[in-house]
Amino acid sequence: MLKAVIFDFDGVIADSEPLHFAAFNMALESCGVNISREKYYADYLGYSDKDCVSVINKEYSLGLAPAEQQRLIDRKGVYFDDLAIKKSSIIDGAEQFIAMLKQNNIRMAICSGALLDEIELMLKSSSFADVFESIVAADHVENGKPDPEGYLLALSNLNAVSDDKIAPSECIVVEDSHWGLEAAGKAKMNRVAVTNTYSADQLDSSAEIIVNSLADISLDDLKMICQ
Image (cartoon, rainbow, N blue to C red; front, side, top):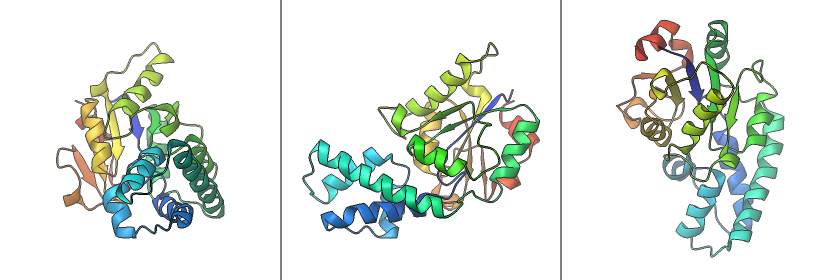
């Protein structure tokens, strides 16, 4: 039985990855680093800011101490907020899909590698900012995707506020990256992959459905996954 849908945020609800990419390069300018779009999308997409900076620090031999890495993350956040305020980044089809779930009393949560204030900032421009019972962001977990910690925490949060307990098999995760799909699989949840960021052949073939847009999925499609 379908009881809940847990969304990734970047690349599923909002197309904020171009903003993250630009903000990272702006922050990294002082380190003499400029990441190509191809490398960012191939190697860093799906990481939390903390994990992304850690990997960049190693790959580019920057030698940044933990405190310096945090300052880099903070600078990136300032640049991102400025970019996000200037433009709505809600992806076509997301509003329609979320409205369908709300009308049918399907509970919803977010599990994202983005920071909570970034997610809330972008949700402000939407019509559905109040539908998510739980938002699990990078701030809330020790281990980012592909670790299942975030998805398990999102489910735990949903179960903490209702007597109608939800099993992992009664959840559908909506993801756009193989990191997220792997995390959802480890959490024993069903998976829908959307090709907003990667093509179908680049996504995990073990996803129950792969679609080009959330507008392509009906409630019956979702219920069949959870039978």
